[in-house]
Image (cartoon, rainbow, N blue to C red; front, side, top):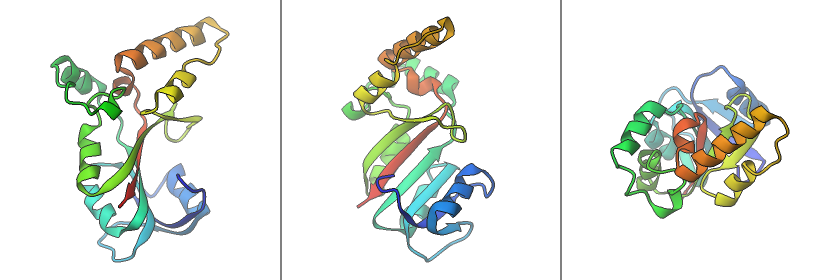
Length: 184
């Protein structure tokens, strides 16, 4: 998040889990959204939700508020078929390292008036996250794959990750991504 202090937080997602527990603990106020709400929030958090939930979250956010979206795991087989069919050419320059996979999500955010959209990789997964790596910053990805590895298994993973990053396959084969965006 751009600021560590969480004020009024709206949550769209399953009531159980580490994310709602943490948000309850660290937020000034926390509300799980299950029906139409009229309250206004500084942060809307979507956990494993689809694009249609964005409009509802947008309606509840104050101007300048933030949306944090933990996306459903990527269907990498479908994504690879999509890429193999040559449908990655229209990818905006800023998403070159993450070709086409998130165009629908980013486009939906842009149509609703969100800006400063950032894509992050939660490694190894959402609940056991050890690192949050910005995916649209080449230097962050280079750093993530440049750290020294001592054992053979670590070196193999490092090399495989480097190849996936350079070929654009990383986003297609890594399951846990989040988007962060600011409402105009």
